[in-house]
Length: 385
Image (cartoon, rainbow, N blue to C red; front, side):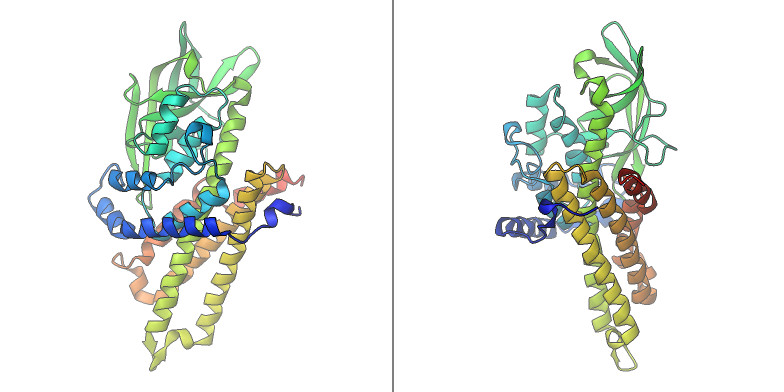
């Protein structure tokens, strides 16, 4: 597969460079690593700062992927990646991925979104949050609901089932829930908009390895009117795939930021740590290891930018490029953090050193939306192999 003309533009323009710098400054000012430790150690169920979330919204960062007619800026994933990269550099715990790229985009990409004029402007303003509940325990990376069912009632549907690893689920005001609907043509996927506090809806916090906001969402005969079905039945799974592809590229941006910060921290340590009277960074073997990390990161960056621009252009090859990017980023982030721990020596094994936080984040990101092996198989399938 050869990249088309739109996907070869890998240099940022002036407005993109300004956006990237603004995002980096905003994240740095929020002291994310200190906050992450405080939230983790106190077992804060929300897992992030509402004040920082509103500050990011005030800067217009929530508005990037939403159309102008919804009150957004109408920009693309090429710009979103710059924001998520900044978040990843600081390990900022704010649920941009869960509430903007999953929940928010589920509403924005639907052609028949209920409450569109009510909810999306509030999401952009940072005053309300939407979470996408699609993953079920034991289903690995499948987007097809296994046990959650939507049963027809006189006035709509009753939702029954349980979702896990719902990113941004704690504190969410709305949930987009996937469920199987049985009808005369067989089983189809429906996406339903459910407000928090609905009778039968229970949200239980989960503790991810990287201490990010996630939850289990239990549905016990949650009554949903017909008008809250997000999509026509025939397009429910297709919309879910589109949303997750876009969120995967945003996650790849976050992974780029994390691996870049990890490399920078490691290089600083190699320059300052001395052995035999000289910095250990002067040892050729360690230079080679650092060079390999840098090369793998640059290859991953090119793949992510290509995937982002392919999705923005509506390319038929976009999903395949998403899988290339995620496989590359999974491998590169794991390599970077594993090597960082080794090159830091004993201090890298302590919780007091920040490098371990990036290792945990790399492990979590690897398994989110599919690991490298899953995406290599997906790439092969999409490419006709």
